[in-house]
Amino acid sequence: GREVSALAKNGEVWRTGANEAAELTLYKDMKLGNTTVEAGTYTFYLIPGDTEWTAIISKDLNVWGSYFYNEANDVARLSVPVSSGDSLEAFSIAFEEAEGGVHMHLGWGTTRIAVPFTK
Image (cartoon, rainbow, N blue to C red; front, side, top):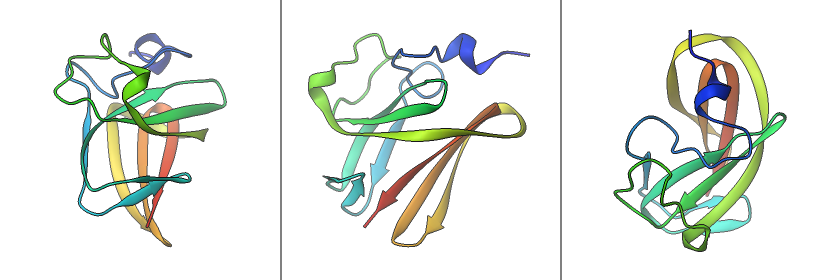
C-alpha cells in the first residue's frame, strides 16, 4: 500500500532501499554512460523524477540512508528513462545480461528503471 513517490521523492537523493544505502560491487571495470567505473565496491544512489531517474555511483561506503550524501564523491552519474510494469509489492533489483554488458533492473509498485552497464 505504500507509494514509491512517498519514500523516493522526486528530485531528492534516495538511498535505493531502506536503512543503509545500497552498495554495488563490480568485479570488472564497467562503464556507466561514458564514465569508466573501476572494479570495486560503491554506494548506489538514485534521484527519482517523473520521466527519468538519475543513477549515481559514489565512492562513499557504509552510509546510513542518504542523509550524508556528498555529490563531490560521485564516481559516475547516468539518467535513465522510467517505464511501468505489473505491480511489485517489494522493492526489487535484478540483473540481466545485455549485449556488451548488463542491465540493472529496479522496480517497485508499477515503476521500473533499467540502468545499463557496459564493458
